[in-house]
Length: 200
Image (cartoon, rainbow, N blue to C red; front, side, top):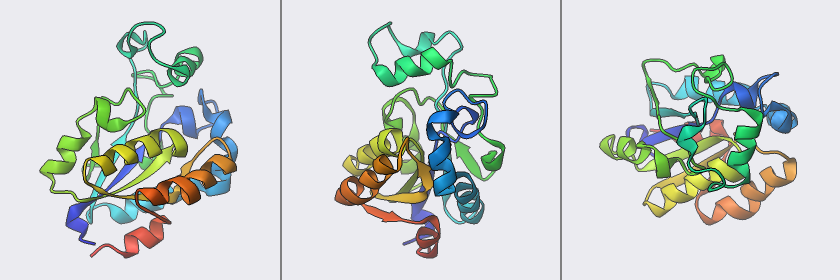
C-alpha cells in the first residue's frame, strides 16, 4: 500500500471526550483505558507523519449552537451535545488534546457538525486533491462517527480501514460489534502497528 496514496483520519480527539472534566469523558473513560486509545493514537500519528496524510477532524459548534440547526431537527446525539455543553468553539473542551496537537505536517479538517464527516466538511476534497485511495479511521465513537464516516468513504470509492486500538465506544460490546460484525463488510480491521507496517 503506497504511503503517498494513504491517509489516516483521527476523529474527535478532543478534551470533551478524552480528558477528566470533559463533558462526555465519563461515558468513554473505561473504554479509553481498556483500549489504550490515547497512547495508541499518539504513537500512530507520530509514526505516520511525513509518510502518509494525517488528518485531525474535530467536531466544533458555536457556543450558542446556532450552527446546529433548528431546534428539534437533529437527534438525541446532538441533543446530548447541547445538554452537556460539549464541543464548543474556543473552549478547552472543544480543543484537540495535547497528545495529538496538530503540527505543520497535519491537516485539521474544519466544519464537522454531523456524524459523517464527509457530509459537512471538505474532507473529500482534501483526500481527492492529495490523490488518496486508502483511508484509515480512528477516534470516537467507534460505532457512531467513526463508522459513519468510514461508511461514507467506502461509498465514495475509498479503500477503508479501522484502526481498532485507536478507537473507543461507550462499551466493549459496541466496540466488538463494529470490529467483528460490521466493519468487515466495508474494509479491514487492524491495529495501528499492523496498518503502518503495510505502508510502502
